[in-house]
Amino acid sequence: KNEVEQSPQNLTAQEGEFITINCSYSVGISALHWLQQHPGGGIVSLFMLSSGKKKHGRLIATINIQEKHSSLHITASHPRDSAVYICAVSMGGGADGLTFGKGTHLIIQP
Amino acid sequence: DGGITQSPKYLFRKEGQNVTLSCEQNLNHDAMYWYRQDPGQGLRLIYYSQIVNDFQKGDIAEGYSVSREKKESFPLTVTSAQKNPTAFYLCASSIDGQFYGYTFGSGTRLTVV
Image (tube, rainbow over all chains, first blue to last red; front, side, top):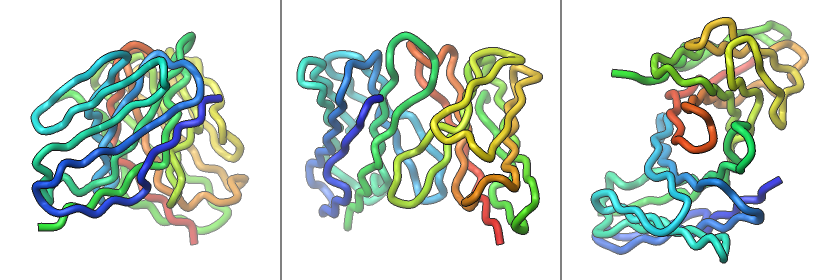
């Protein structure tokens, strides 16, 4: 069973700051997912990656397969980025769902 | 637009009653999932289905049941055997659950009183 650890659990920053959220996992994966959950509860998929780096707007996700570690970066943070960011992994060999971290609660203050 | 619809958004039930949560997708995805979210914990897998008329137990299946009679529908029943049913329930789907991304519903918040 994969263990997914995220840090920090809570993060408060000022608007415009560069944000980094970290995720580590214990065993090999087929893909890592970064998800965003807003207060209403619905979840949006931000990135799915198995190697390297992906960028979408102000969001950047990187993964180091050898170190079993991924980071999500937010550049020029904005109050609308306030949400819970969740790291999840899928294992190879079957479609038995994702294993989730506990999430990072991010608050961006104006 | 394609997506997943979960209903209702909020549900209140008396202790001892069974309740069924709806999940419908029009994405033509084969794999569907039910997760439970409790405060301070990561989402946990209740049941999943990779194909019509087949489903598998997840990590916390006790007290829950599902059916997959149609590709687009994967309802979850919370039975009276579930000891702590009050939680946030999320449905998700994926083309294959392994090499493609996931789409999530907006969730159902169940409160049992």
